[in-house]
Structures are given as C-alpha cells and as structure tokens.
Image (cartoon, rainbow, N blue to C red; front, side, top):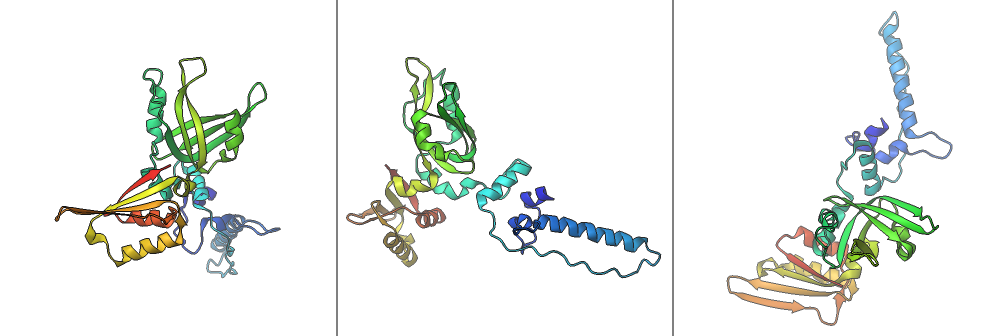
Length: 295
C-alpha cells in the first residue's frame, strides 16, 4: 500500500495528497496505520455479518479515519519516492523547471560528455570549458589511504548519467553540494594528468543550477516581429525590468521581413536581473527567439 501511495496510484482522491498518508502527530500513529487498521476491522465485520445465521444482521458503523492536513511533499521528494518504487519518474522530471537554463546557457548534455570521455584515449578531447547540469542522484564522502577527504558526485539529466570526482581543495569548497536531490551545474574541462598523457575532467566550479540565471547572464537578446509587440508584451517587460533591477542588459531585435527593416533597441544605463518570471514568459511565447550571452 505504501508503494502504491509513493507511485501516485491514489492521486485520484483529489482531497488527499501523498504526504498525508504518512503524516502523524507526536504520540500518535501514522495515517497509514490508521487506514490499514480500519480496513482490517471493516473486512472482519463484513465476514462476521456474512457468516451469521441471519445474514442481514446490522453491524455497528465504523468511522473511517480522517487524514490530518500537512504540507505536501516537494516535487523532488515526490519524484524520488516514485523512482524508488517504480524505477522511473512518474510526475515529470526534476529538471523540467530548468528548461530555460538547459537551452540557453551552453550546457552540454551528459550523453555528449560521456561520449567524449569514453573516446578520449582514442581521440584527445578538446580543452574547451564545458558546462554540465543535472540532478544529484548519489553522493559519497570518502577518505583516501592517506586520510584525505574526497567526494564522488553522480549526476543525471534527460540524456544520461555521469560521475565526477572532487579532490582536495575542490572537495573542501564544494562538499556541501554533495547531497542527493540537489540540482547543480558543473563547470570544467578535460586536461592531461600531471606528467602523463592521460586525460581527466577537472572541475573548476560547482553551483546550484537555480542561481545560473541571476549570476551568469550578461545580456538577453530578444528577436521578434513587430506584430507581436502588443500592450501585454510592453507591460510585462516594463514591470519585470523594474521589479528585478540589475546589471544584465536587454536587447530587442525587431525585424519586419515584408519591409526588409530591422530595428535594434538596447538598455544602456539601467539593466535587470534575469529571473524565473522572465524565463517562464519567454518559454511560453514561441514567437520570441531568445539568445543569452553569459559570463
């Protein structure tokens, strides 16, 4: 029954969310225990009524347990339970809320990274800086034979999984990101190991993916046709820029293909901070082509 709850089988009961089945007050039993006890008593009474000489004998009513209100699970918690019991995410993927970042911030899919890593003994990898992002599905804190700390980070995106090692100073700086369920971005490049011709991926930075928009965005470029510039567009842009002041510049490339005319407008003195509201708006408006220039 717990597995059915974790997998979302009871989501059809809209007045109860999954966390309520496991919620309990101090000194009380969980709702799941109350439900199973109620079911056992109900079945027992039903069997007793059937086996009596007078089968229509009225049995006393059993009051179903009430599930107490409590905060629902976060999406990450819910998806984690789903994967634990079914082997897959049922309600979506933790990265669904980061499609803007995955699309516009030069993030390499893990499948592509794995191809480069697996072929590096045959084809030397490029030394270019890479950005990789995903859900932390496993993290380990270990000690070397010499007693030095190091970490192992296992990450997953829509395309695959990969493992990253954090040694010495990197471990000291970023060990707080070694936590299952976090969504992070790894930056680094392939370099040769000291005094060898073997390559390894060296991490240069590790941070939460949710901070990427506000920290790395230098300029946002919006390309659109004049017919899509209406009152709602102007009011949203104006309100958003005023609500999130910052150093990111905003540029508009307005192209009229019929008249072969293009107008460019850019913010000069005042900028804004790239934010979730702007990301959702741009994702939802497919007639706007978006380019992001990052730090």
